[in-house]
Every structure is written in structure tokens, then in C-alpha cells.
Length: 107
Image (cartoon, rainbow, N blue to C red):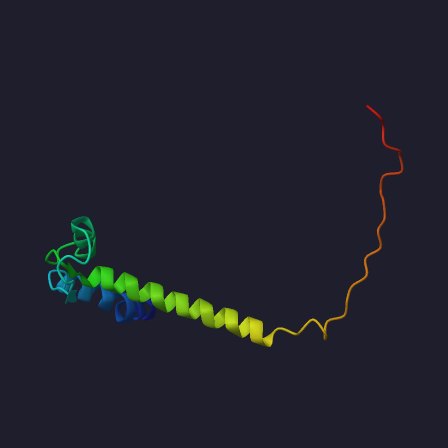
């Protein structure tokens, strides 16, 4: 069982880690000069890509965020579409009861 778990990790996360380490100095693409301030260029090129480019690590984070956002949107749309409408639901009647039998005390 341990070998299966190790093989699964290597085939999914291990490959991602290897690619990020191997290509950490290679820019994914270049940002046109003057589009973003210097500190943003530094963050986008973190950790070792040339300044003014987007590193593979930042690009991976951006892609993962978009995929997660689209997944949550699809789930929410599925719930909204498949939820029964208000006409089909039966209204529930609640009986108002008081557990306190004492009268209010005046201060």
C-alpha cells in the first residue's frame, strides 16, 4: 500500500515539484515594460525568474486559483439548477409557544 501511495504522489505532485524546480529560472512569458510597478515585477518573477517575467511558480498558482474558482462556480450552478423551486416545497407551520410563564418584571 505504501508503494501505491508513493507512486500516486510522484505521478501527480512529484512531477509538479520537479517541473517547478527545474524551470524556476525560465520565464513563462514576459510582461511589457511599464505595465506594472517594479515591486509587482519582482513578485511575479519570484523566486528566480528574470525580473519583468512571470515565473512558473506564480503561473502555477494563478492556474490553480482559476481552476478552483471555475470548479466552485460549476458546483454552485448545479445546486441552483437542481434545487426544487419554492412552489414544490411545502410551507412549514410553526406554532409559537412561550416557555416562560412569569410576567415581565418592571425595573
